[in-house]
Structure formats: structure tokens, C-alpha cells
Image (cartoon, rainbow, N blue to C red; front, side, top):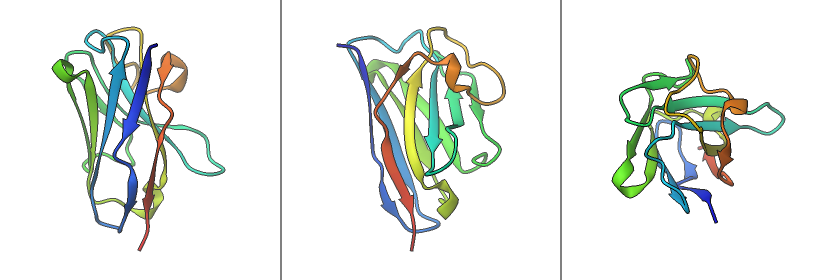
Length: 127
């Protein structure tokens, strides 16, 4: 069974850091662009970041530029999202998703471009 599993979420104080992981099972991520999305209560799903299959191209939403870093380890079939200087407005359920092609599309990822989704991990930034 092909699936993506996110982990690493939790409760953190403002200014803190978390690293999210997105691990694939049942299929290889090597040739797929991977995106991170988030959805806060009452809000639409937002594209946060994307990384191309080889890792050379990355994209970030303006709201997270300079604070979040996306990376991947294809040998481990895993993609990461390092989140620093977290703010309360970063609170959301974070999802990773795999795209059927190797490139990210557009300046920020768009949900309809991605085919496989994880179940999400909750990130709460609060004092």
C-alpha cells in the first residue's frame, strides 16, 4: 500500500523550532516533487513549500521564507521541513504530498497538482 506519513509535529513556544518528516512507503520518491501544505481551522489549505525530485529547486510561500527549509534524502525516501522562528500563525495541520512529476509548479505549491497525500501532523505554536 502506497502512503505518505508525516511526523514531528507538536506544541512549541513562539520562536521555537520543529522538524517535520514525510516518509513514503510502497513507492519511491526519487522522481517526484514533494510539497508541504498546511490548513488552519476555518481556513483553506495553503501551499507552504515544494522541492523538486533532485532537491535543486525549492519554493516557499512568502509567509515562511527565511524561516522554513525544505530538504530531502532520497536514500531514506524522506522529505523534511525544518521550521524555525515559529509564530502562532504557523499553527495548523501540516500535510506532505507527492506530485507525479519531478518539478515544482509555480512560485508556491498548488494542492491540485499533487496526487498522494499524507494524513497530516498537528503543529501548535503557543506560549
